[in-house]
Length: 179
Image (cartoon, rainbow, N blue to C red):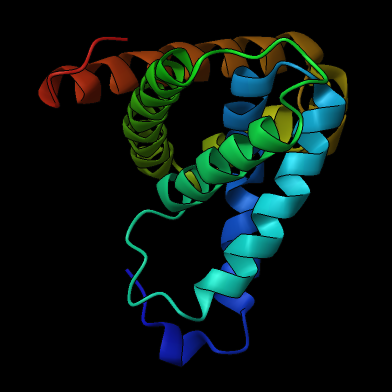
């Protein structure tokens, strides 16, 4: 996906970490169950990812790479804190880790389907959906922003949601996935 030699300034790494941080954190949280511990592990994971990034040949799946590093950081955390808390045995942790990675692969497929479906919308429709969901705007604010009656804004956003859901379901069926 990228050549690290061309990204020595770390811009690619920072962008990818910002995009995928929540997914990596959710993976950690699923395995440790404590937000304070998950915060510490995420910090250690990000630091090790930064260190390893410049040594890696090629990273083709940034979130999977980050979750693999997080997995090792969780194991390290467990060894250090074994006596402090009740711990899962290693087999259970590995099983949960594999399941979480599998779920993340499905999220990737669904996310790609959603991106493709969004790109199929005209510019105004895409802006309406992004205003509502990426920017967290209320429908009332969107109506005011786009100078459309409130009831029309609700109707348009609802219609676009239905259109996106149909498109995503169709794309997932073509990939052999189920929504």
